[in-house]
Image 1 (cartoon, helix red, strand yellow):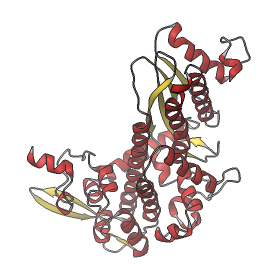
Image 2 (spheres, helix red, strand yellow; image 1 turned 90 degrees about the horizontal axis):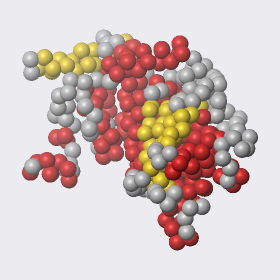
Image 3 (cartoon, one colour; image 1 turned 180 degrees about the vertical axis):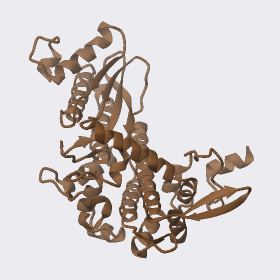
Image 4 (spheres, one colour; image 1 turned 90 degrees about the vertical axis):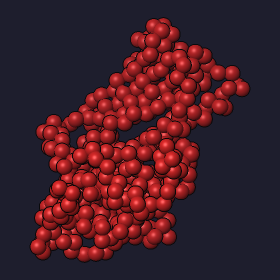
Length: 392
């Protein structure tokens, strides 16, 4: 890094450090914000290039500081660097092309002060591969965090969340690939927990995230049979997922097996067939994971937020489209699941006795743009925000 920081672009052999250095220099040379676009097929090295650029910019910004300022600024830079293990665990997966393929795009903005050091930043994510939560192609895996969860939890926590091995979960075993020799899921779990501590996630927040992930795994094991419409065949998985998500088992059953519609002020319940029930289950799992991912990014942003009063360097990491035909099918699946994530499923999640689950969906608009809190809000204890609304 030191060699490239002292040279202009083209004076040394091509390297990602040379691009990062030129980007940093241009903040003053061109008096404008800079952006690096990183694109390419899956496995080309986009994720690693992003991390190298962040590492270089962090190091070179430290050179511009006096000793009294370094400690405070290094905390921001460390937080930005430590966000990578968390985002990779929640947004990366093993594919047939790459064992750490990023399934989401992200834009990382680093705010640089006039003295040249990083004083804050933010991350914008483009999470578009939600379907991987519920289905994977042969030879591929779900997101890393699920396998890390099963490999890294202590025995007591695994018992509390009713967890065992990946082979026992439909959302993990359907592709025929649950492991990779080049990936240590246990080590990944330790890295994620450590990174969350650096990012100032509280122990309770970490626990809520892990419980939600466990709930998603059990949700995928809910199976249906045809008996005058779809019926849950075994209650064990349903009971466990309901418990971990803070939901009432009977209400969860109803939401998955029948559609609720309002006609002329009356509620009409329509039984779903087995495929429709499976789609409802999967859309619920995808919605939970997507909102959790979004919450994690917001939490990271709250930690790395700083002043934005001079210039910025943006790093746009666009995930690979290695197979356009498959990607077209993915969009179709997502559209279908948007239709199956009905208002009654949204209401169900707002019934959760866990504030964490409720808060994830508090501001999600219904498909009809109507007030869908009529079922959930009356069962919840008053919050500070609701009291302000009451007296406003």
